[in-house]
Structure formats: C-alpha cells, structure tokens
Length: 606
Image (cartoon, rainbow, N blue to C red; front, side, top):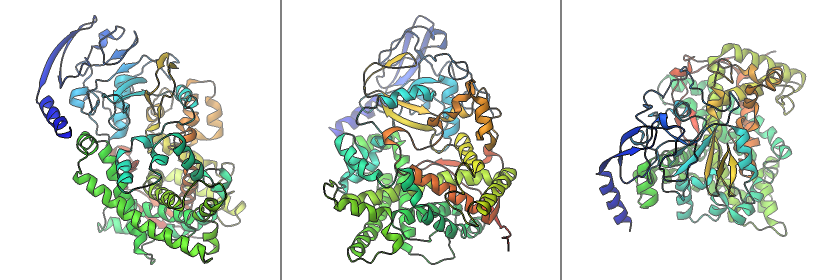
C-alpha cells in the first residue's frame, strides 16, 4: 500500500492542471498540482460564495496568489500593517482561506500563495505576512498542526484571545494539546516502548492519569516556589561561566557558544529541581560530569531535528506516512537515544541510593524523590518505570525551551543599555532591601521587581518563542467563533505575535519598551482597543487550560533568577542593536542566534 501511495504521489506531482473558475465576482485562472478541488478566487469576490473543499459561509473569502503576490506581503518588521476588521475596530472579521492541497496543505508557497518566508528561519515575518494577506480569521493547511482527519490539514487561525477563551472552555474532560502533533516524538516513544506515550501525547483517561501525577509537586505556585533556593544557587554558579562562553564564541572556536551556554544553564537549574544536584555544566572553567554535557547536546539535537521534520512535507510523506527512516530521523533518534541512556542511568542510580537511604538533603526534597514517594503510596496507579520516563521527558524538554526564552531576553538586555541599567538598579535595590544581600523569592516578586516582570513580558511581545500561543481541537459541534459555527474536530490556533506588532494597538511596536507593562500603562489602556494586548492568553508561551505546560512556573522562575543574576554580575553589551540584523531559527521553539556579546564584570560592593 505504501508503494502504491508513493507511485500515486509521483504521478500526481507530474501533472499540472489549469482550471478556470467563474465565481460570480470575476474569472480567475489558476494552476495547481494534483487533483485539488480548492479554487482560488479574486478579492473582488470577497462577499460571494465559492466552491471549496469544505462548507463555507456566505461571507467567506478565498485569497488567490494572483491577487496578492507573496513577495508583496512578506514585510520586514518595519513594514506597514494592512488593517482588517477585527481587534483595532471591534468588528467581526470575515473568514478567509489560503489555498491548500492534499497531504501537504499550504506548505508550498508557489502553489498556495502564502508568504514565501521560511517558517524555520523567518517565522515572525511569515505570521505578519499571513495576517496582512488573510486578516485576523483565516484557514490554511498546516502540515504540523492541521486537522489530522482532514486531508487538506486545515487549521483555523484567529488573533482574538477572547474568542479563544470559548474554545478552551469547551475543551471537555479530555482537552487537546499540541503534543498530539509531535509525530516524530511519538514514533520514537513507540519504538522504544515508552509506557507514558499515550499519557503524554494522547487524550482520555490515560492522559488524565499521567498528567495528574506529573503536575503534582510541580505546577502549584507553592511547589514551584519551594525549588527556588536550588535554582538560585545553580544560577549563581552558572553566571560565572558567561564571560568564558562569550570569549569562546568570539574566538570562533565554537560557533554558537553562548546559545550552548544557555542550554547548559537551563539544564543546571532544572537538575537542581528534578534531582536536587548541582551539575555545573554552564561554567566551562569548572569540572563536571561529561555525561551531563552529552545529555544537553542530545536533547538539543533530538528536539531541534524533530521540529525540522515536523515542518517538512518530505518528512511527513516519507517518514510519517510511508514509515521510512530518513537521514534526519536517524539523526533525531540518535539525540533522543543518547539523552535517554544518560538519564536512565542517572535516575536508576538515584532510585538505588534512595532505597539505601543515601540521598543528600537537597536530593530528598527534589521533585524525583517526592514523585517516588507518591508512587509508593497506597492507591497509586503509576509505576516506577513511568516515573523514570516522566523525569526524563521533563529534563529533556526543559533544556531547549527555557534556553530560547533566556536567549531573547539576554539579547534585548544587551542591545538596550538603558533598559539594562534600570533592571540592574531595581534588582540591586531589591536584593539589598528585601533579600538582605541575596536573590530570594521575595526579591523577584512582581511587587519588588516590576521592571523585571515587564521586561520579560516585553520580550515575549516583540520576540515570542511561540508565535502560535495555543493549539486546540474543538470538542463540541456548533461552537460559534467570530460568528462561524465550528464543528467537533476543527483545529484552531491562536496566532499571538501580530497583535503585539499592530501599530493601532501598540505605540511604536518595533521598539523594545518594558514600560508598556508597568501598572500605570496597563491601567491607561483599560477601556480602549489596546486593552486586548493585556489578555492573559497573550502573556506567556506556555499555552492555557488543562494542557498548559506543567513546568511553566518552574521555567518562569528560572528565567527571572538567571536574568537577575547575570545583570548583577555583568555589564552586558551587543555589537548588534537592530533586530533586523539578528538571525533566529526554529528549534523546539524560536531561538535567536546570539551574536558575540561582551560580559564586563561589575564592581561588587565591599
């Protein structure tokens, strides 16, 4: 069957059909491959019905490549916004459609007419280009996040978080998650016999069982706060390695040394929480277990390659549908396997030492120790093997995701001396008056460090690590979103980047100004269209609802702690100050390729 499908694809791709449609608003002639029944219609027909592969309302619009060339609507950050009905004027946006094709969706711009920006290397311009071309409510075929039961991979994109609240509330007992789309990770877990595969990547009672166990001692604010002393200590050790990493990168001995440094920082801080140990991989001048560094490299290699594969039509067809092992899949699984082998040995050793009563005081209060205690309680429905898998998967996911948020914050601090000085003054004062000379939970609270919180929020607005903030599947029929009735199984994505770059909602959106998020500024926006940017669904990259990232509070604490420690220890500068000169790439999330930053030691008070 797989061979027959491959033959069909080859035959179909060799045919180019020209079909002319008369849709009542003008005749459009278009080329397309295969046997897609999705015609393109001109913008002149924007209020007319047209033939389409799925039911459409009378006000639906399809945008043709001929009427809006993708080279004309892929702006740089400074390009003018095309204003549509929606957030700025309070009107209900019309639903528009990008052209989509079987299996590959809208992935090929030359066919679909979507912006030609590469989603892996130019995601920010891509999403603004999509909004400029299709508005604030549209469909396109997403090979990563589209409806898996729809051959066109249809996704509905909305910009209004208030409408997305309806979808979250209608999520039902077993809500959906973007993790269901990570077919590469699922394939690896299947091949390695992971017991928690359905609990992590699926829905139903199995998900609820695993999720309930995982988030205990992790997601509650008090639980996350309890891990802060270890995270703070790890960050203090990690900060000492910043200058060495910068020197290594500037000497060109290691390309991307600063990004690797932040990967290790994230690993060190999370290890203090998960295992109760100080791994000290971030500082190149200190000795550390080389297995820790191998774990970090394996995690980055595995997750980064998996995301590349998920965005690739070739990998979708050859790797997922035909179930062939591609070179990328082999490279990806090598990273997964290396990390799992190292983590398994560490966790098994931890369990053995716990049984012998040999754990240190820090290890005894770690997440893993508490999880093992819960596993032994009467009525527990989780096995030791599952605890091991959950510990590994948490450590694995925590490296690349947290470090990408850290990298963007660090860049903005380095390229904005005035912002950096304000942050330094705030943290220094809070440490002296509240922390008695040390970073503490109280020092980093929003009441004592409002500028720190505002800076992190501004970084997320200007350079979010996940422009698609939330990905959900509609769980009920006839759920009304923007006046259109969604059906059970429809996939809806909240695109959260373009709102923050809309000049009708944000003054001078290309500027990095943390002051936008201080209390007075937020109060001043209330009652105006700009108030929408303060919606909680736009505030973080951790999703929302019952499938929100269980490690979100720990990750947020890690970000606040390390940024504060770095600014206290170093005066940081960047040779690049304009964002248009900065390169970035989609890894597990969008990660900036840090330039050669300079770290000058600050004079410590006597």
